[in-house]
Structures are given as C-alpha cells and as structure tokens.
Image 1 (cartoon, helix red, strand yellow):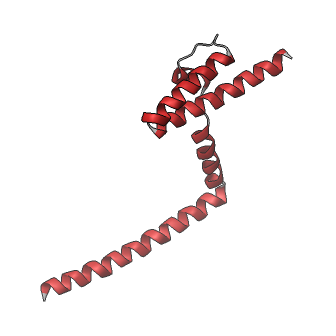
Image 2 (image 1 turned 90 degrees about the vertical axis):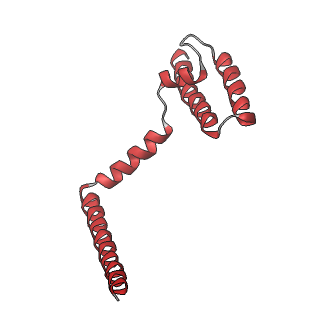
Image 3 (image 1 turned 60 degrees about the horizontal axis):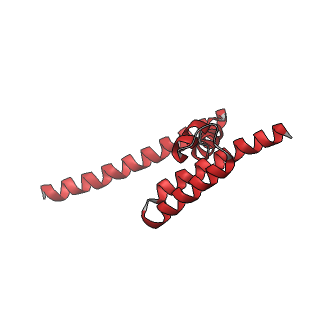
Length: 114
C-alpha cells in the first residue's frame, strides 16, 4: 500500500515538475525574443562554429606566415588524406577549416596586391 502511494506521488510530482519547467522555458524564450538576445546568440553560435583564427589555422597545418599557397595546399592534402584513411573526422574537419581560413586570407592578400 505504501509503495503504491509513493509511486503515485512520484508520478504526479514529476508531471508537475515537467509542466513547470516547460512553462519556465517558454517564458525565458519569450523574454529573450523580446530583447533580441535569442537571435543574437544564435548568430554568434553559427559564426563561432565556422570561423577559425589565422594563427590557429597556421598551427593546425604546421606552416609559417611566409608559406606560399602551394605549400599550404601540399600540407592540406597530406593531412586531409592521412586523416581520411586512419585518422579522425574531427581532425579532418579542423584541417579543412584551417585551409578555408587561410584561403580567405590569401585571397584578400591577392586582391590587395592587384
């Protein structure tokens, strides 16, 4: 009898907690959307996940500031293929992001020299 009462109490109590949490979450979203914080946060998350800093990109590929674009491509191809065969997808992604970052840098330099 006591076990059944305790089980019912747990089920009812957890239902109340779930509803309260859902209501608080909806209210927090409503408050965030009123102030524009939610949209700004989503944009920062999207930007932050795709952008790599130039020094980090150079470190990932193991190159210096004076490396040519051809050297960068050679390092990229070697590292990308090594991680495709027996490495990790995470490292392969880092190598790809590093190349993308440096590609933008070298394009800007080429446009500036033209």
